[in-house]
Image 1 (cartoon, helix red, strand yellow):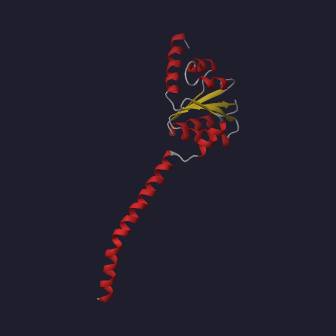
Image 2 (tube, one colour; image 1 turned 60 degrees about the vertical axis):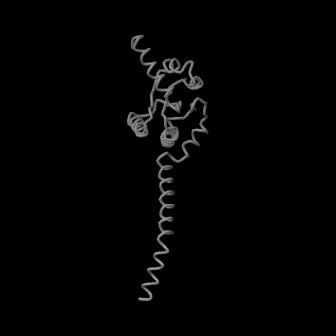
Image 3 (spheres, one colour; image 1 turned 90 degrees about the vertical axis):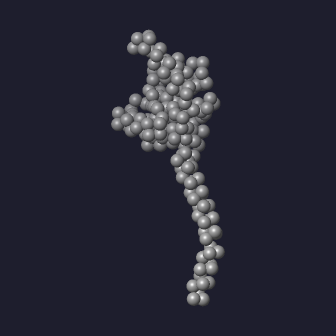
Length: 167
């Protein structure tokens, strides 16, 4: 890569990383197969997240002087960065993959400008997703609406039963 191409690449990566609400550093040992990596990237795309394997020097340059600076301590060896604007979805996807594949270890990350540990990432992964929360809210609203309809309908139903019994 020529210097100008590297600068452009680093600039794009920096914009993507700084524009994300969560960035996770992941240690990926060399034993991950192409199929496993393809599956992980597919899972990431499904939740609108990205998973990039970068040269550590380029990644350090990209995060230098930003709120992501603390993540630089994880950029040693074969690391990758996962980033998204969906913190819970990203934490779930990475955690699920790490459970089934011991070759991938979550090191830490940055969420909304604050450093987060592996324990916080595990907690995020245990939270319900946005879609699950939406489904619960819709269920609660629907149940409340049904109770209101039933309550409004009941007096007329009683009258109909009394008329039917006398008739």
